[in-house]
Image (tube, rainbow, N blue to C red; front, side, top):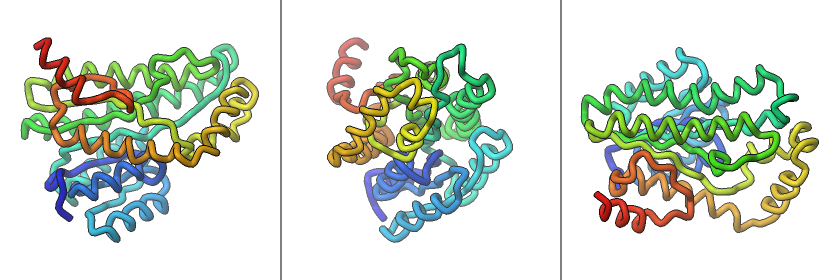
Length: 268
């Protein structure tokens, strides 16, 4: 399958469903050899089957993104199958726990940070040496608008997303001299399985009933699923290298990349 990104190799965490699946399918359609990873193997296999049915190259490696040994194994197996990783899309995430800080369970709260902060850090750490050696590569971390909002009873999620943006900013500054770029993105607003989990969550129903109402309204809007395609296209655009000058940025889905690029060049 030939495309704009022919020859690139990618790892996508949380690649079995939702935004991760949409990103994987879109990148594969542009010629990227895609490795998807998550804990649920059946979901990964479905994603790979769709990629291959469309003529693309896909590979499934199950694992837990919070376990260092799994991260090392995933990257090693991906490189062994398709060659050095040129693109990392860190997409795995969890929505909870939903509770005020004086109620939230410390273990659940800290596990959210392992998913949102430790996991992308470990994957970034694992793929960067080969990117630096070859002086090319791109990292995309799927963040959220919660990174700058103050949302009641969502401190674990909001703090994790804020930290993701900062991690991207710091990593981008460190690797700029080696031709490697890093971005954080807002994926959009779609009722994925994570949103379904949120709507069923007792804590969310107790502490954030107004959010549950918004999610249900969004679920009824069939047009909202367009954000899956828009997010996937954003990843294609960033993987292309055309917007490397925006490295280190957190990018909203509605941001005009061409306009941001123009303004960035004017200030350089």
